[in-house]
Length: 60
Image (cartoon, rainbow, N blue to C red; front, top):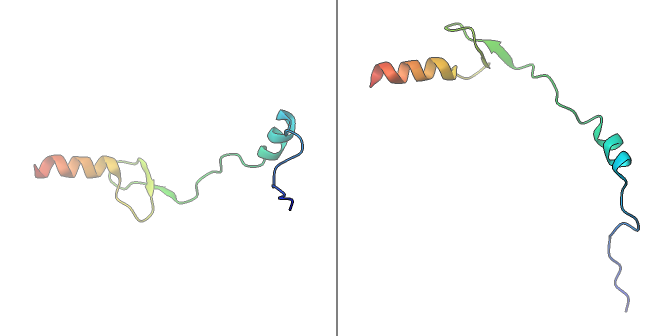
């Protein structure tokens, strides 16, 4: 009884790997807006971390 394994016959060359990865670069985020309080970028449905830390400091 012969067992077949799913392994490549030859090693993938560096250039082929890089060509395949060339289209997987970083994408620009479209869900960031400037904070109304300080102007730093933040996610649409979240509070700005800078403003959050300011509020936390004042409440202590």
